[in-house]
Length: 407
Image (cartoon, rainbow, N blue to C red; front, side):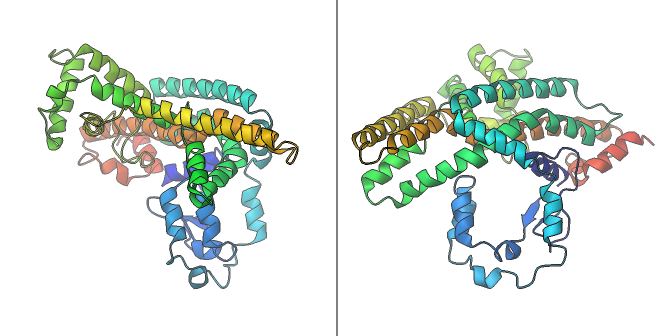
């Protein structure tokens, strides 16, 4: 929960304050034992379920579907009287900590000059990722502890987070909601099909790049080797990969081993639940990766790189079609063509950023998890922990306290 607080604070541009949210469940947002919760009874006093459904469709379709359900009854669940601590004064105290003006200016830069802003963003991300790589290679300074190390990591990616927040909150989110509404509620099947094409096929999307690399890696291992292992035996294949990497044996293709090392270097931070520090990652539990790789092998499995190329072509065909339609009606609707062209610039240059914040934060969590596991190994060797996984019952402050007290 400490890192969840750190993540949410970082997304808001707050670096040092680890207690951004209270533990009081009467508050609008509060900390529980393992995650944050929103007190919807308070939010329903001001906003209805449909507001949340529309705004969450882009970020989390599953949660959006819950708000769309008949059980999400505003009248039934909204609070009648706000707690005295929920006041405009306290809201302003929180709001003033968030650099809204800075994020807004970044958003306007993306809105006015998407191509230039994108190039600047790419340079910022590359710089931030180099800093994180350097911190990952250096590791935690034992005298400073994990909390300080986490602060360093979050501070390193803050410029990227600012850029992504500006682009998403002030350009991407509103545009996606409009496109998605037409995709779902268009008057004809043709309209719905066109807007469905506009909602996909974005070059540069890091999540899609991960899927493409995963498929490529899977196909570098012959199917005959995959056939040797059932799903429950993939830990044995993981051991075999490790032995090949350690040059103890040599019975796997070198091309696969080279691709494996590259994939782990780029995406080893990923796993089942990237934003839970206790959740295994590919880097420390490679059998999880092998389980996903296995799904990319066999007849009928389409290369996601081909799928992306098809989606990009389909989207750009619709973009071109909409420009032609707007041009044909330029005397009736003189501003329609410029609006379509601006939207198309956003689709080409900004929409691919939609998954970037989560993946960058997940990378930070992966680096922190690796450091926590090293600390756990040390404490297990000293007999200060009983078994693997016990360290995740501690918070960062308790781990730091244990590191500073060797008695």
